[in-house]
Length: 253
DNA sequence: ATCTATTCCTGGCTGC
DNA sequence: TGCAGCCAGGAATAGA
Image (tube, rainbow, N blue to C red; front, top):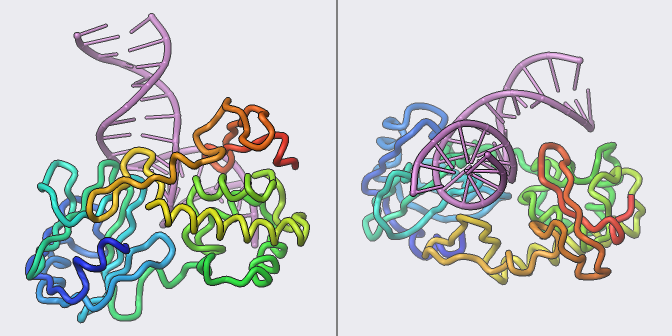
């Protein structure tokens, strides 16, 4: 989002083209017609969505697992969208096609139904919301309506930092621990942003640069390797159909 | 409200 | 070397 902004804000969409089924709702050719001539007023982020505020509506882009929004490069087999601007171009590539591009009127958008931004939420409000829920903590943190923007990696990393077992029940987490979790989430996100995100396989920013935070993961992807705090081998289980990494000694149930 | 399984997709990896 | 089979996962969906 941050690297897309300078290439996109103030530009006018000269021509749009979409391929494949994941452009919703409606017909992709109709979308191309709707977008042509629109000016990009602003680009912001809401949860995992990159939101383009246009003179005639809102375009929301979700990168899914392997989506890339880049400002250069050739159109290839995995290119699913092209926005030709009056100056430059925005190309949407997505190998696994888990991403989504959606167009809404001035109001709409799935991004409106998301929970609060973790970096805008006070610790007190977070703790209250958390302790009201009867759910395992990991699936809850992945629930975008509860909290917007956390994915599998950042949930595992945050729970490790807070010393909370991924299967712990949210309503049974002590106030103190919950506060620690809020701090852990903020710390994890801020560090990751500072390092340009996590590039496990495909993620790159608009200029095609990979992130560096994957080198700092403490539990994610480190199954069998010693916990950086206590040396116990990191364990991997499946929670809610998601690979889940934690230290069985530092993160007691 | 919460949980589980299923679906979408392809590159990369494993094992023979 | 080749190839079949499995795995990763965000989120919508259905059904319990």
